[in-house]
Length: 156
Image 1 (cartoon, rainbow, N blue to C red):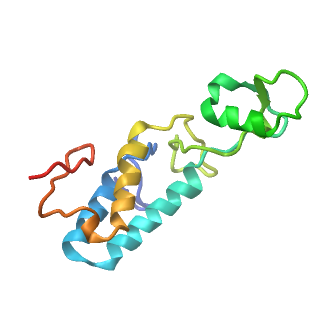
Image 2 (cartoon, rainbow, N blue to C red; image 1 turned 90 degrees about the vertical axis):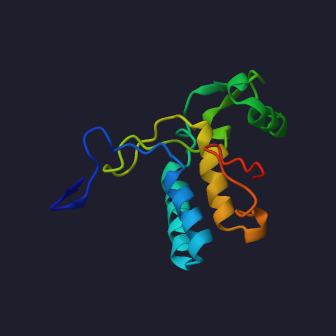
């Protein structure tokens, strides 16, 4: 929606869950036109996601986190920090490295508040389009492949 302040989200549209469509468009426009501005825009979007959406570790005096909720990362951290006292099945929050990405609840508010969810399409589609945008053209020949909604490239 456009106002005197410029483009602003409409009612209920101020969230960003890292959907792939913008990077998909930049990828396709780059491949079709070869204009560098589409790569520059894609890089700008990727940097914004990295800067604003990267999950941050909880405060240093945070609660203990059950190992099973951290998956492989917790197992690695526990082995690496085996000198820690207490229950080896628990890690202190400050021992968990920053990891993952999450959506932004309201893009009009700074600092951003993350939604504590990393969508599957972030890895499966959004990052794949970013990667394809900066890959050599022979990484995916668009004359012999077609992309479906999941960025899969079955032969034509």
